[in-house]
Length: 166
Image 1 (cartoon, one colour):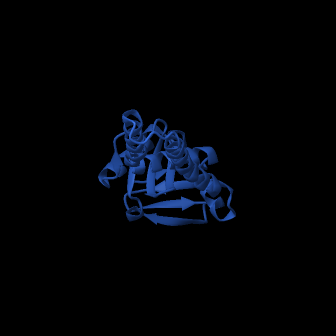
Image 2 (tube, rainbow, N blue to C red; image 1 turned 45 degrees about the vertical axis):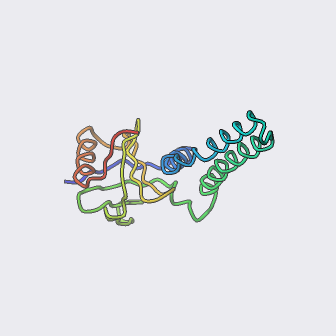
Image 3 (cartoon, one colour; image 1 turned 135 degrees about the vertical axis):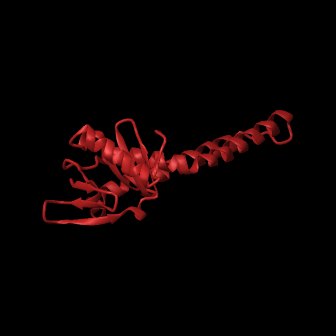
């Protein structure tokens, strides 16, 4: 049995939001670095060993620039011609062997399940992650019926891809 979806496309703002959230999930441990530097600078300032206000500014500015870098990267993807296909409308046929990505009834491509690293269920969508910034976004409204939705979820669980809701 296969799951057939309605034709849908990914919104550019939604792409940036999901990509930034994935990057945050992968790199959230690095938030400890600026926090640790702020703490060390605070201790040095309070004890009078090395009072310096510039360190606070540099640390906060560096952290903001790092977040801004990733935001610019993912926003830039939405503007480039070579990534235009990420935001076009497709419909999908999904079964336990493969994912067929179709432009129309005669044209399309095949994705194998081994290209998918993980999957998770969002509030109103399923996200299939291929790599940083590359994913398939299946809103629940794209499925034709509740049965298709449950079958899709069962396929993801059989492939050991589906994790808990984020």
